[in-house]
Length: 149
Image 1 (cartoon, rainbow, N blue to C red):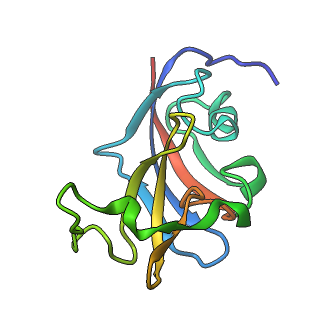
Image 2 (image 1 turned 45 degrees about the vertical axis):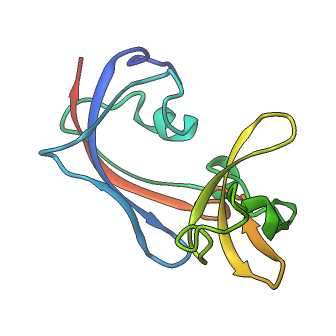
């Protein structure tokens, strides 16, 4: 397949749903489409590749498997972190921050930034999941090319 539209600005509307449960994950309307430059890996490479040969007015409907999207769920990306990691300078805790479902930015020992979701509160630690929120999900994209420049 050639890359006819590589490095062109594309505007698309689409609805993204999770194949496994049909949950709507994201939506861009024709009135407020998403815009990006094709072929510059601003979005998932397989998503961009599916749009590479399309023209304004063309519709699309495809699935990107978890392996080609955000990968499978990694059980090693879920672990307990000592509660004292979240202590404030005065030894207290921000009760609003330490709640199940909150996503907290963290830095690993090498200085890399990660976002972890609190999934369980234990007596002296919290269990956090550092998988991408869409890991393990097959993604169904259905939409239309609005413009191409």
